Amino acid sequence: MTNLRFLHIFVTLCLLAIGANAFSINRIENRAADTSCAKTPNTSNPDDDSNNKNVKINYSTQEGETCTQEQKGEIETEFRNAIAMVNSAKADWSKDGYEDIFFAKTAQKMPKYKETVHDTLTRITEMLDGTVNAKDYTLTVTCAGKAKSCAKFVAFMKQADKTHGTLNVCDHFFDKNIDRKQERYVDTTDNRLEQCENGSLDLRDAQRSRAGVLVHESIHTSYAMGGPDPGEDIAYGLDAARLLAMGTFDRRCGNGPAMRALTSNKPLCGKTPQDPKTEDGLCKSELCMQNPDSWSFVATGIWFSEQCKKKIQLPQEDGGKTNAGISSKGKPNDNSAESHCNGYSTGVADFPFD
Ligand SMILES: [Zn+2]
Image 1 (spheres, rainbow, N blue to C red):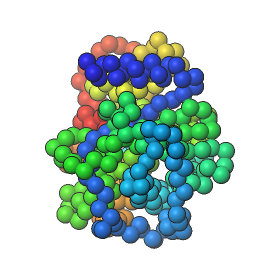
Image 2 (image 1 turned 135 degrees about the vertical axis):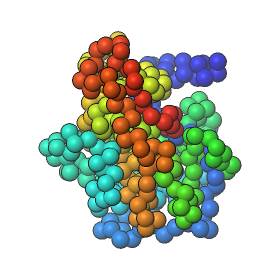
Image 3 (image 1 turned 90 degrees about the horizontal axis):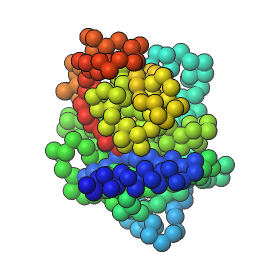
Image 4 (image 1 turned 90 degrees about the vertical axis):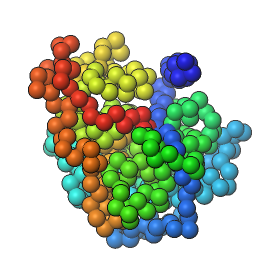
């Protein structure tokens, strides 16, 4: 009941805010940042300077949403990790093959694809290091830890207009007692790096790092996207993001409707997604370009592989399910029949991880 009430309020607020977009992200249990074993950011790419320079975060001073000094320290650590991550990805976006898993061939064949990727990643670093605030966009960081959306999420981005975004970091972002049995949780980037030392880190874990969250959130701004619209959560989680790139992700099937509920039931795919009354459908594979998780998985894959000096593998349980979502009955272009979902699987339900 609480959830329904929350959803109702959330949707209402979204409708009331003219032109506003509210996005959600990662919820759940975290362990404290252990700065004593903080890893040195990778220094093997050409953008080293921007990895190491100070980040200038524009914190809110509004009562009820200010961050404590301790929180600021943890946030800044993760902003730096995220910058290093994005710079690694920018240096060689195709490295280790994550691009081909999460970015559709249709997208890769688009004119200026490489340039778009490069520019998007550059703009993300500008958002995170504070360069953006001297330009035509302002990013404000708030710590309204008990904001309504924090009931489910670890952090969320709101873009009230095309020149101002607000990243709210929830109390869950700073949680110190992580329950690893939970399917959904986010941990500090340092703890994730420790996991690669003991060999237990897979790509899903890697992306569930605070730095991975920040990359995801950045895509929820028109600034990062370099256009009028921010990215949207078309496909949450590793399996859905893979299906999206394959052109077989259907928001009507499997976990799709639940994902849709998390994005205010806005239809993002299908034949006429511009009509709000039209139900969702099969998503065009090139929509990966607007899907925050698609970016976040590639960036985390590349960076953690570099840091761990070993390619981060896909989760074991997904290893043999590269055909998740491809129904023996359904056809990718069949976007009308009710029976479309027969035999369809959207894989592991790892949303709303954000
Ligand atoms: Zn999101």
